[in-house]
Amino acid sequence: MTTAAVLSTTSDATTSEAGAPPVLELEAVTLRRNGKELLGGVDLRVRQGEHWAVLGSNGAGKSTILSLCGAQNHPTSGTVRILGHQLGRIDVQTLRRMIGHVNPRHTAGASLTVEQVVLTGLTGSADLPRRWEPTPDEASRVHELLARVGMATRAGERWPTLSQGERGRTLIARALVGRPGLLLLDEPTTGLDLAAREQFLAAVDDVVAEDPTASTVLVTHHLEELPRTTSHAALVRGGVLVAAGPVDEVLTSELVSAAFDHPIQVGRLNGRWHATSA
Ligand SMILES: Nc1ncnc2c1ncn2[C@@H]1O[C@H](COP(=O)(O)OP(=O)(O)OP(=O)(O)O)[C@@H](O)[C@H]1O
Image (cartoon, rainbow, N blue to C red; front, side):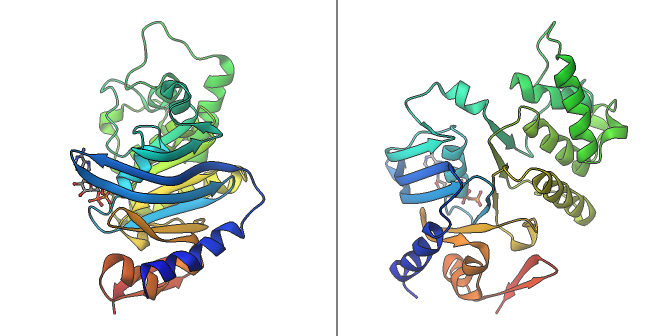
């Protein structure tokens, strides 16, 4: 199947989802750095309530796309609209505060407790600013979120003593504390063991299930690392989307093989995906 054929199939699928307002729109986005074209014309629309997975091989451009979605980068050409605001026409710090970002490489202040790490989601910092105090509402939201991700009994634990899985769940609560309109997850299960990965994915499914207006974009290499709640997928290859649309139409053996340039058999069991060499 050619790239053009893939794109025409999936653009129909994407536009048929019309209804909920878009939270993220990339139109004809290109990005060049150091004379190299990293993105070669990306179109992507994420609507409220959708949960997208962005998949592709090493160096395909997934993190670059996510950096635009998180207002961490600007396109060379094309338009990026996040939560109704066009990049370049709004203060990026203001915009970044509207976006929740789960980055497993987040470095929290070493002396912070779990509860304080979640609070840093409100200050947008690694440490808590001196003399900063949460409002009673903010403090109760932190406890509500820690309960949701299964960390309520660990609120007083210090960050360095946490396991990778506990850190991951704490970082989801941190990303959600500011009630973001968009949640970005950047290879969030990297480095987690099997149990920690499963607990993390269950925590994502739980927070998503409780808020029908939540919208997420998750970047990963592995189909096994997709939450059950994934509703849409985009496949990236060489800085372009080779497929994008409802997850069952995109995560097929044919399209995934084309995106990874390798024969891959895709399967789904109990709502979760798996992939092996065909
Ligand atoms: N500032 C830059 N200057 C030049 N090339 C860059 C720059 N940033 C990224 N790249 C290149 O752009 C390409 C896409 O990078 P990106 O990190 O988006 O890929 P990825 O799909 O996330 O890869 P991985 O799965 O390995 O994390 C890579 O070839 C990378 O080396």
